[in-house]
Amino acid sequence: MNRMNGQITLHGRRLRLSATQARRLSALLARPGHLVRVTQVGHPACPESAAGLAKAISRLRGVLQPHGYDIYAVVGRGFLLAPLEEPEPEPEGKEGC
Amino acid sequence: MRPTSRARARRRRVLESVPLEEIGVIQGHRIQGLAERALFLVDGQLAVLCTGLEYRLALHLLRAGSDHPVREQRLRAALSLNRRSLGKLVTTLRRKLFVPLGLEIVTIPRYGYLLLEREERETATPSWGSVPPASDSEG
Image (cartoon, rainbow over all chains, first blue to last red; front, side, top):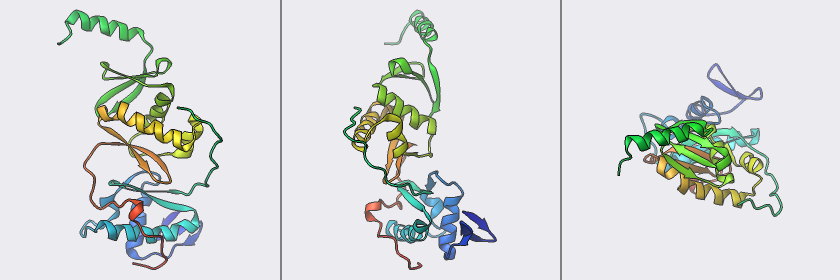
């Protein structure tokens, strides 16, 4: 993912994002794979409701998922941006505890 | 009852003779580990006994550090555990090690686990249970 001239591109293709979405994604891209606080993802001058932010993040996920990325929620704390991981089959019968 | 200076000196000598590994400073607490006994020593005073698996799991999380999540798949592969066993292990470790230290192991659905300092939760973060499915429309 690249940020060039205010546009965000993924694998060389420009992502179609609104200004708000681009700002949210930029905040997540600043620390990929790390926790980004809610206050950093939301608008500093206009705090959102949990439902409003959830909906906005959900839309952003819809843009990113086809490209192999996802936004994960850390309940009560924030979000992180990371590549999707292929589901893996459960190991058979191995119990370690 | 406070230990006498002689008792403190004796304890210090005993600890110096044990090959403790420095794990790091977390929440202002110095954490050392003794892998062969699966034991963590907090501030050189409080010993936390773990099972071998608990010790290894704690090491993974502590070394990843705060704010850096660890993939569940990576933990399962490293510890040779299935998802259910890993979940149980995390639950045990939460109580045993991190609650006294003021640290939380936070579960990130579909991703893994994250070690965080205990704090008041911010109000606007949803749980994924409440998040509507991804949509294409712009908000």
